[in-house]
Image (cartoon, rainbow, N blue to C red; front, side, top):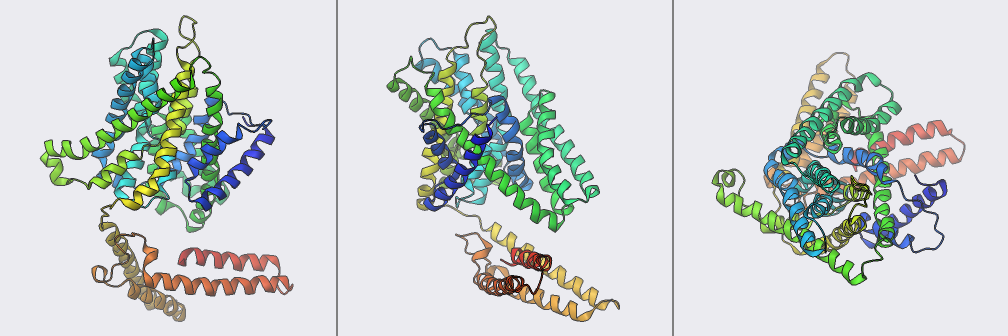
Length: 531
């Protein structure tokens, strides 16, 4: 693990790099990778790399849990076909395509070695995709497909990796056991994740202690991951399934105070873990290069370019094949889900960032074969895997904002009307409930009238839907509505005045800190709700 001084330095670097990346409008993963490479060039920098055996166990479960929790189960089901084509079939196609290219390009290489590399670099990374897409203004369906793919594709890649490595180590490969293991990993992983997620949701109301509730939310992904790995199942798929279950039942189980606190804590933890993960990738790059003294720089550069181009080209060809050729061959699919816009298909093909999973399984390659000899091309495979991560994150990540600005995306307006319909329905039902409360004899009517006026104004501001759309179809963000913007501005001014007044009373020793903190908490909760 990190030495104490190294850990302190890393935290400081994460903060500084994040600030620079935010000012420069650069995606965090790209900035952290570049920072990691630059750090290794500083003489005497006390940085100790993390043991690769711990990378997946420490970093991946909470990052996957957070990504899965915020993913829509309904949207995953609707986009099941394209996600299946990408998360399962494309991983297999990419693995063998890269494998054959490696086999034909590297002297004395075997196809099994090539498939090992292909399995390492074939699955795009959920952590990288989520981090990049958060700052990209692309259609919601594109985001759903990419996140769904990156959450589910690791099971395919890891199975191929295990059997390709076994084929290299033992010199034999058996298709039937490989297929059986794949089915076992998928089915058992999903079952373990769903079971633990359901148990957690059933027990959650009994905890009733916020600190323990939040701690439990971090324990769950680790329990699921370790339990799945103990049964030779897919820890990745188990955590994703648990995250989907918690995301489905959480809104009715979690209190508002828990959500506000937990979201803030999870946001900070995920930010730090993301920074550590991508810094690690950058830190590993120079050390990998040091083991390749028997290859010329030109040869290494050529290998890296060919493998990276192969990955990108195969993915681009596959997404257009899946979007147009398969729909052409199967009219029933086309009838339910018509041809998508080429811009949406292109961006799905272009965004295929590799990340922590590829790094971890590359570094976990065995050192020796069954006969005790060295694992062939180990350093070269690790180098090409790290190069693929670097190329996809930097090349595709840096060009993504330019492409988003110049591609004319086709946004689906149903998201706009879903938002409007949900707000109007909830507001009308709240007003109906207020009428019921007003009829009850024990109700204090002035309180009902005050809340009622707020909801009546809210309903009026929402308009009548299609004639007064909540947002601009090209900018699907409810905060862009002029009335809501105006309200946010007023609320901000009023609450800031209230906050300054309370703080000034505390400075004048008119009130104590306990009173100040209680009132500030109420103001902060209201501010979080209204703007």
